[in-house]
Every structure is written in C-alpha cells, then in structure tokens.
Image (cartoon, rainbow over all chains, first blue to last red; front, top):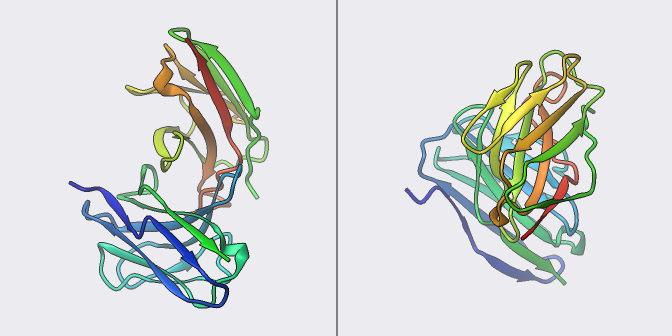
Length: 111
Length: 111
C-alpha cells in the first residue's frame, strides 16, 4: 500500500496563477482532509470530505476550493494564488474519526 | 473554540520516561482527546486517543484527569526517534469533524 500520496511535492507559483493539488489514498477511507502548515505553526484545516461527492469547510477555507469526485482522490484548488498562501499543504485520510493518515506534504511558494 | 494549551518545548534524556502535559479546560463531554506527533519534514503521525479512561498502546500511554480538563501523554522510554513536535487535539462535540492542532510541544531527546 502506498498510503496517502500527494502531487506535486514542490511548486512555485506567481501571484494570480492557479493550480490543483492532488491527494490520493489507497486505503478505501471515507474521510479526507486538506491542511496547511505555516512556519512554526500547527496545522490548520482548510476543507474536508466525509465521503465521495461531499465536501465541507474547515477553519481556513477562503481562497481554496475542493472536489471529491472519486473516493480515493481529494483535489485542492487555488484559483488565484496569493503570497499569503505560501505554505506546506498536507492531505490526510481516515477510516473513522480517530486515526488520520497523513501524506508527505506539498511545499508551495507564491511569489 | 475547544482549544488546548501545551508547553512550547521539553527535553528528556534517552531511555527515560517522558510526560507531556496538555490542558483543555473548555473540553466538552463529547470531546475526544487525540495526540499526534510530527517528525521533522514529515506529516503528522497518530499516537493515541481517549475519552475518559486511561489508554495504552504500543507507542504510548494517555492519562486523562478525572475532570478531563487535562491529560498527559507518557512515552515510557524515550528514544532519539521520538524527537518530534507533539500535538494535543480535541475532536468532537463543539469541533465536530474538525481537528485544531495548536502549536504543540517540541520534544528534544538528549543522548
């Protein structure tokens, strides 16, 4: 099992550009999450999904959109990137509410 | 918000027990207490969770105060691989599906 994978690992964007981060899990988990982590900070929840075709807002959803068209994939989109979105993005999945499995992260820089 | 308070940093000698404290005075009756840890340049990793009773697993023990306003993560014999940031998180009740990570405790293990 690959667990949770994230694509890409690194990305540099210019202000105003758009991009999509892909999260994939092969554990048949219902729940998936997107977090961001700024330097010296804990993780903050952006959006999450409790099943295929569902999404919900987390703590810091502004400037991001998500889609869960397939159970194994959770996409995070930035329509118009801003320097404030420079961060490390982590995806996670879980079978239930308790144990989340995290991916290796995507380091995004917006200049 | 159901938030937690942890010391910013702690040190421990290798092969000695470590007690990582967490205060959560605003915890509600249905909040679970979760602990995750994050090794450098990696995504967080589940450690343990509990509701009211003390819990043990292969990684650690979780001691929960009788009034549930505080808890302690116990690593029985610290190793160099245990050096990480440890997050105490509440989930459920007021927070629903969401995890609030906070800034955690950075544990240094001294050889």
